[in-house]
Image (cartoon, rainbow, N blue to C red; front, top):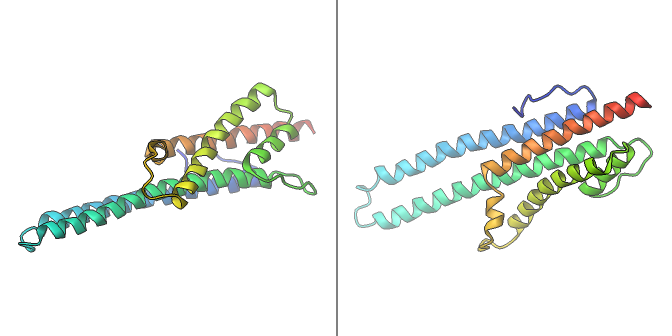
Amino acid sequence: MYTDFYKFSQIEFIIFGDRLSSAILIYRSVKKEIAALEDTISGQKLSSSDLFKGWSAEHDIGIDENLATVQTSYTISIGSATVTAVAALEGLLIDLIPDGIEAPEGLHQLMEHFLKRHQVAASKKRAIHKKLRKVSDRRNQFAHAVTGSYFSTNESIQDMFTEEALEDTLYIVATLGLEMEGMEFQHSSSA
């Protein structure tokens, strides 16, 4: 759905679509490779138990550590795809700022600038900002999780790095892009 979800016509939106599709392609490729790697490593545990008589527990610990690293890589790939998708949206907002106008800093300020320029009603603004807050919180949580403590027990952070959370993020970013294109089209038609 996301790699070819819509044919944008304006160059800024085409670039946004390409960036979002790239994030999805990278995530799906990593997911496939990680699944194959997990199978290979798990197979080593089963096939080598007779080879390491007397050392099988130590051997299994090493394999378990390798599996943990692979699983961490999967989590990082979800976070990376999240960051890339939100960055695609932020890049779109920057690209849509008219020449000669200084771009505000930060995702929320960029969106607010876009919404004001397009004279979006307050109720629609609130709905867009709610979606934006959700995806930007996920992006920020990933950045803090990567630079934070490995021993963190905050389960709300772990819940953000699931396939379901990523799918939701990708969907929200895509729908925000579609909404923005509609606003941009109306704005240019009325100008």
